[in-house]
Structure formats: C-alpha cells, structure tokens
Amino acid sequence: MSDTKQELEQRIRERAYFLWQQDGCPDGHADQHWERASEIEGTREGDDKRIDIEGEDSFPASDPPSHSGITGDAPGRRGRSRQGASR
Image: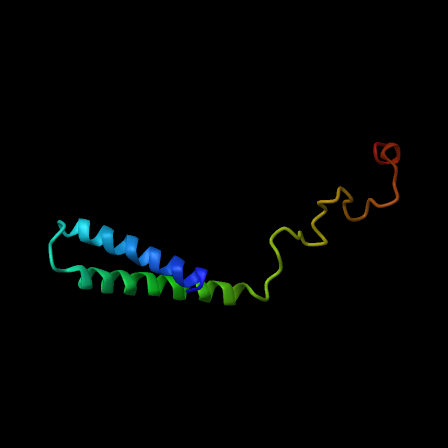
C-alpha cells in the first residue's frame, strides 16, 4: 500500500474513532462509523486534489511582481544618486 493510501486509511481510522466516541461508543456500529469517516475523508481528499489542480499554472507566491519596487529601485529614480535626490 502506498504512503498516500496508508495516510488516507489512517485518517479514516481516526475519524471513525472520533465519530464512534461522539456517538457514545456504541457496540456493533463500527461499519457505519467507518463508512461515514470514509465519506468525510474521501470528500476532503477530493478537495485537496482540486486545490492542487487549480494551482498548477499559478506562479509561486514568493516571486513578487517586477513592478513592485521591492528591490529598492522606485520607477523613475534609476541612475540618480542619493545626494541628487535630496536637492
């Protein structure tokens, strides 16, 4: 089993346990809790994949726009010295 499937199964197991506790720890309902947990985690897994697909073509957030002036060079001030700018 791949890591992703193992991770998903672990999340389902933990979610089913939480649901079982939330329902008062009833005997004989493990399959129902597992099914509910699978549905919840399966939906979550699908959302994660959708987010990944939507972000495939986007640029990294760490790359600032070239016109932002982050480098310290404001537009129109290139080539001037500090002394010339204070006159």
